[in-house]
Amino acid sequence: MPNQVIKVDRSAPQLRCIACGRIALPDRFRCEYCRDLLEIIFPAWTEGGPGGRNAAGLKKLWRERRASPHPADLSGVWRFREILPEIAPEKVISLREGNTPLYELPHCARTAGIDHLYAKHQGMNPTGSFKDTGMTVAASFARQAGYRWVACASTGNTSASMAAYAARGGLHSLVLIPEGKISWGKLSQSLDYGALTCQLRTDFDGCVRVLNEVVERMSVYLLNSVNPYRVEGQKTAAFELLEQLEWTAPDHIIVPGGNLANSSALGKALREMQQLGFLARVPKLSVVQAQGANPLVRTIRETGGERLVAVQAETMASAIRIGNPASWKKALRVIGESGGTVEQVSETEIAVAKAEIGAEGIGCEPASAVTLAGLKKLVRRGFVTRGECVVLVLTGHVLKDADFTLKFHRGDLFDEAASEAERTNLRRHQRSPLVLDPSAEKVVELLSSAE
Ligand code: F0G
Image (cartoon, rainbow, N blue to C red; front, side, top):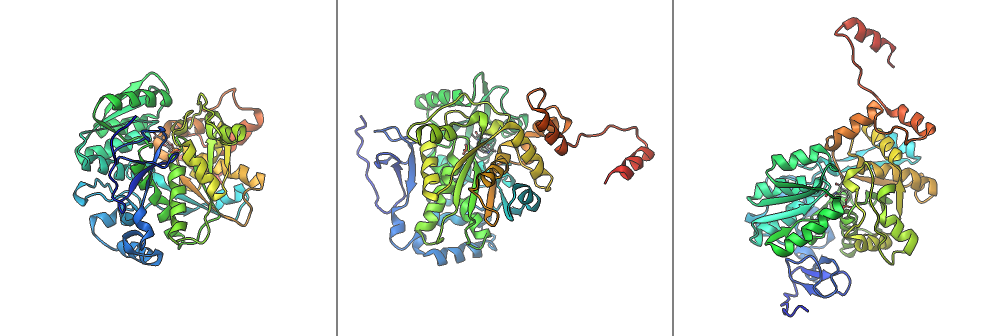
């Protein structure tokens, strides 16, 4: 049993166990008593609000900062620093993350059967995924705490992000990834950013198991999403989204679910926004998983959320190929609090949705496209209705997995697996590259027959 007495500064942010409520030391990831995850709480907020400001004051301050050349204000994460744990400015590692666009998706809205659809594109972050918003906070904390090494197990995006932030901050980074199961684009990022990159002959869940043992033995700071500082940074996407919508809440926010930290982070942000008086009403937060990697869906449908149903994960959306998600309890809580739901989608539904998002000139990686595929099902279920405003959180950039995109358009992604009806539907979205002789005649001929 732990015997260290933890002295608590009652006004400073604290790490609290999500199960037993005990306070933990600032560099821990799990409660030393019940082994559950930790979350950061801000006791000082009850006395006058973050930074001594109320909701109106904060909204004004954050808007003013958008015109400021101050380095912290140029970051779409640190611009919201009043709702984040404090890090000494000289320790902050920033790549000007956040500040991501909110796009309208009129064609996708029509296909899904609703009037108003937006995409909050977190793939427009510096390393091409939403991970950067959390990494800037957690990597900065690691630097402040004096760690020399940081590490993560990853399906590719966390590792790319961690490697970049570590490199910027003068830290060494260790990456554990499942061999042959992440996109080469993501792998190449972590190589270029200088991480010690190990491909393990296992899956993501196996990499997590190995890493947990490594961090027990060595002084290496864990930057997986069980790290509560990452969750804090990822929260800012929801603040930024609501700011972009002039603080009028959409009816639904839909996110992909893998290890389930992002849904937890966005849900925590919504809870805090309501607590601080930013919002009168909270959007419903729903999580979509790939059918072959659906532990949260099964947990809810088969046990009512009582215990985790871990699965052997299998999906071409490799970012969310996760069978034993660490943050399942946090995700369950935010889905319940907001009145959201869960949905699962097939491989062909993901591929079609990805092509539809691409055809709007936006694009995203396969894992992000589960949101649109899931939305279509939620509309059919009647959970989302035509007049409601929906925001999809697109988590990764279209160039993250170019292999998937090329195979899809060439018709090589699904062979016998898809049914005839599915194949017809897939063909409607495929645009295979054409190979022609170098003749203007041929191109003109082709152009004349094109629409
Ligand atoms: N979308 C993308 C593009 C991701 O990379 C991930 C997770 C998710 C969605 C799911 O988010 O895990 O918070 O539920 N990628 C992690 C990684 C696991 O290692 O890059 P989550």
